[in-house]
Length: 434
Image (cartoon, rainbow, N blue to C red):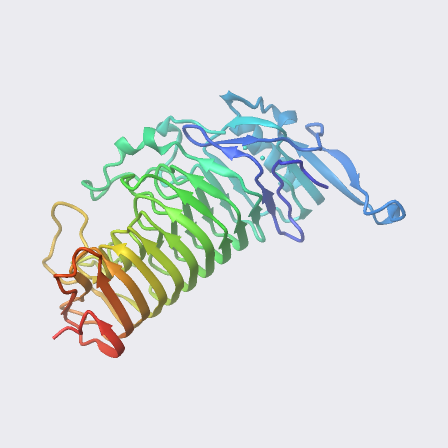
């Protein structure tokens, strides 16, 4: 079964696939769908897909749930969230092959949560629009959330436009330590074996894509865009997750292109074009109690252009608990006009004032910077500022060549080190710390 430029969600053996063939836009976010080929009654219509003229016996019977049959109006003004949730819940309770259909139209949505488990569904199909009223969003909620589903596949070129410009003025996280986070465009919670490909996120209110407690997440060909001055608009934020692989994506935003937070393991980032933005970061770490360790991070073959940072590890001072970040490799990274190409900052504080009574209690070790090349827009190209209480161990820099931009050749690039004895291999420009 196919949807013509529409959206499809499929669950083969507890796997779900969402094809997005429209534009998600609106104040809370919106998806303008270009239509599908199937419609159904609110109770579900049984249809069949022919494999071929002579293969009728091999036909696959499916149950179709059309959100319009559940009351969705697709007029771009009426909130269709309840219709979407009703269609999803009915589909989840069904058995066999299930198609959740969103026909042509612009759907005002949200927030909306697609939550599993859909225990008896062998396949599933879905398209979606949103509200600018921030009071609609609960604490720590996203605009579009997927949770507790195994095998989700989100593909098809949809565009999620969060219209964050109308909400950014309410973002006070740069001055308020206990600020309320604005909703991300797409949030994945406790997902297993998820694949996201060809999705675009524009002008999210905060993070564009957030992963929390996910296992086996693969994302590729993702496009993310927001102004360079948009606050807290991290492209992809990863937390308490394992087996994450992000590749072949373009991220332009106002914060970290990718941020790898606490409790992560086995995270691989490759072929990312980042900029504008704050680079690719591990952290920030050490802000809260009971944070998990970070290990097994690999960042390879990425380009940073016009970013505030290139590769950054950031931890808070005066950490309430101790934790570890280890076994991290950053390799084959190209810097183009980057302000801080390589930076370890264990006194990270984005606020006007922070407590520096105690040093950071995040222990950094076994960190490798390999083949980092390009241009720095500032004389200080390498800054390794480690914790005074938990000095960095086994920090390696191999084949680093960072030159100043043209027009600054009368100045020399430099490096600085604090509470670390780094180990150097091969070319080193700037020269190693004294």
